[in-house]
Length: 268
Image (cartoon, rainbow, N blue to C red; front, side, top):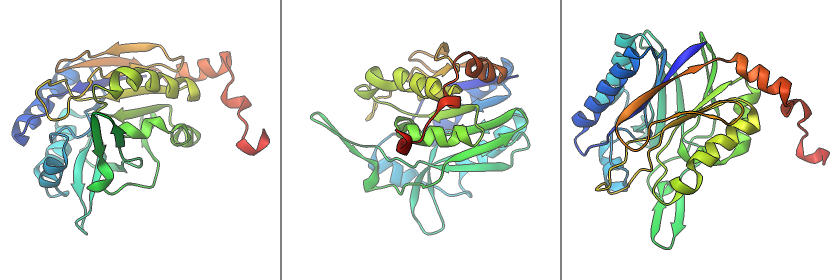
């Protein structure tokens, strides 16, 4: 049993201001007893092609070093939402780094499914400026296995089943659904993945800023293995801390044996 903190931070044009929002909400979550802390997708940059390219950095950058140090100083597992990460080749990924209580990097997840949409009044294509990852990410912790997905990844049940099959009992989804997709699908999709796999799911979003280039839906939330909401941050900057008991996964699967009766596609 452990406590999960979801920090719904503000995103600013100035990286230092975004860093300060992460720092103060993470400190609040730690004060509330969090053992694992998660922050939002693209927490250090406004969500647009121009900013993401300009704000991309490697492991020698200030944001990576900040997350590493914060994890160590707070003594928590720290899921660093995501940042635009520039690798040695100069390619940019939407990347989530996970750090141990000692501040060591223990996992890296590159967003697999890039966000390409084409509504009448909204066009956005991450694939124009980001490379996609290819590998599901499940990390071992003292509390059990935790999976990582980023935003659009949550729409792909096969990915979440793969992480579940690899032992994940909690999957964290740093994400930034917008004001078109968020009201339609954010809560529904998180709950669907929880119920599909009978695991805990938590989505962590930036706070809403109506004046931003890209307006996040916010509403960071945690869901239990039966699809019941444990808590929601609403729209403003802040955090929630929820108790996660992996025994609830076993109880849900005993009551409703979905995975036990799972069949492969070719069996139907």
